[in-house]
Structure formats: C-alpha cells, structure tokens
Length: 203
Image 1 (cartoon, helix red, strand yellow):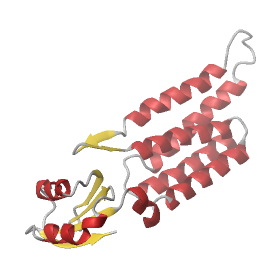
Image 2: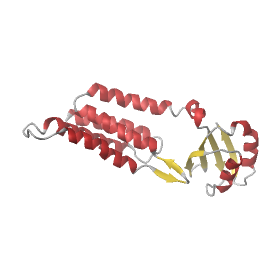
Image 3: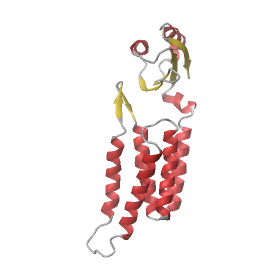
Image 4: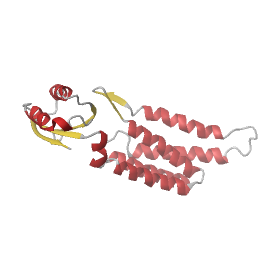
C-alpha cells in the first residue's frame, strides 16, 4: 500500500508540472498511470508464487507497451504541427518510475521523479528555447485567422514547430526555428502591418 501511494504521489508531481503548462494529460492522468503501473509491478513480484509455470515478467513488459498506447492518444496534429510528444514521453516515464517503486526501488523512483520535473522546468527556460526554437509572441485584437502570419513566416523561411493560443489574452505564441534572427527588423515590420496585430515580442 505504501508503494502504491508513493508512486501515485510521484505521478501527481509530474502531472502538476504538465497541468501548469496547460497540457492535455495532467495530474489525474499521471496519478492513475503511476497507481496502475505500481500495482501491476506488485502483482508481478508477489502474485505468482503459487504458480510454478507462470512468467510474471510478462506483466512488466505489458506496462511498457500499454502505456505507449495511451501516450499515442495525447499526440495529435494541428495546423500541420505535431503536439503532445513531450507529454506522451512523460507518461511513459511516469509508468517506469511507478514500476520502480512498485518493485521496491523506492530511492530510484523518487530520484527519477524529481529529476524529470527539474529537467522539464530547466528546458522551458528562454535560453534553451532560443537554441533551436525561439518564440515569437503576437498580441492580436482577435485570435482567429493565422494565414497572414504564416505567409510572412514563409517569406523569411521560418518554420513553425508549435503554436499556443491563449484566447483570454488574445495571444499567440509561435515556437519557430531561428531563421528570423537575420531579418528581425523586417519581420517585425511585416507582422505589425497586419491590422489585427497590436503587439509583438520576439524572444
């Protein structure tokens, strides 16, 4: 019972980080994944003592493939962009952490939980985003048609990896490659020429 509770709490910690970034799989999803994975590993360790021909390791193997199936459910394509890969990988890793705790490797499970959350926090710092994926923040009067913005990006050879839309703030954040750096001023002027755009921040 202690292992199940601890694994579930670790899942909550990882899920909270995802929820704080408005991702589709949050606290409840990660908590249930961790609970289930730890329970299956406990079954693997202790439930087959009375069956000499059973191979309990198959239970562990099915966790890996089963969570992979769940992770595929949070990966989707929107506006020709693939989203959800990090969340899916986090779900898969959460199951591994819970499996560690379920088998009694508590220190490794707790360490991996803290290490994963710290990594997620660090990799969202602007420094890491600017290495490969700088952000262009565009404030508009109405968040709607993005065709004009995409045409300007194409003009300068800019590829959009991901777009996040906050309709409450009328804010669009474009995760891009770094080809705009040499055309920063021109890009700013072209984007401001769009009637709906009121403010631009290039990070």
